[in-house]
Image (cartoon, rainbow, N blue to C red):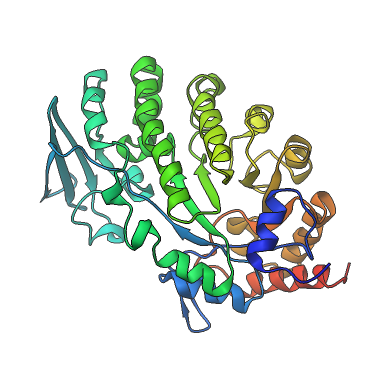
Length: 381
């Protein structure tokens, strides 16, 4: 087979087609600084991956929108424990006010407004949603994006398309976060209690998020995406009962997959831990690829993962970032690379890592992983 570009190789693997060699695609945390590359910049992340000989993807995201009648303001207060100050944000909507407060830890000391991410979810002081009555306001502060949100560039095609075209890489849109957004709004404990205490209101929250993310699928195609990423790491059974996944999450996922395929886009689901009781459910949804997994920190081995997904989807998984890349045993990393290839083979598989590669990891472990993969791809095994 003739040589393929990274874009051709990744897209072929997603579709179960022959590839010139097993692709390897890893991702770097923005805090990583190595070999003159500053991974807080997208282009440096891409160039570092290419310098290692791997197959990077280029990412972009489309923000949700806010109803034009909503007024917001932010302010800071002293913390109640004297350690961390608080960042408050208020949203005044046509049906009432919502407020959220987070502790300002060193990682988010520059925030001027609340971001819906892990830092917010893990530093909740006052959750955004506390009762079912609050949900009527949520639909005003989390609404489907509009054409004005599809920026910059003509037709919304931004710098990510130029970067991807320069190196012939696939473009990926992180279009959907699902229940993770409720965790970011409320904190994990509050989100789980809300799901148990107010199931109908919880489902309505999920539907509000789903409607916005369906619009993001359409906008992702217009913005030049080849692949859609749907994050599902906080929808698993280490947070919620399996019935909540089946009743609330699965119907949304099926509609999202169907719509993506109608638009000619590939779509994958990222999971990490807590998926063991849901493997058959996830396999039935129709995703082109399942990504992530955590063989060292979950009860799901490579063999169980491959049994669940091997006949229905590409697998994008591999080396445990926190345990192996963050550990001190290079030979264990090499052994795990060989084990992954033995289980998954070289078709319908992308060798990856379970979480981002971070600044405090021993960089030699990452180099050992890449070196072992190159040995296998060149016929060393």
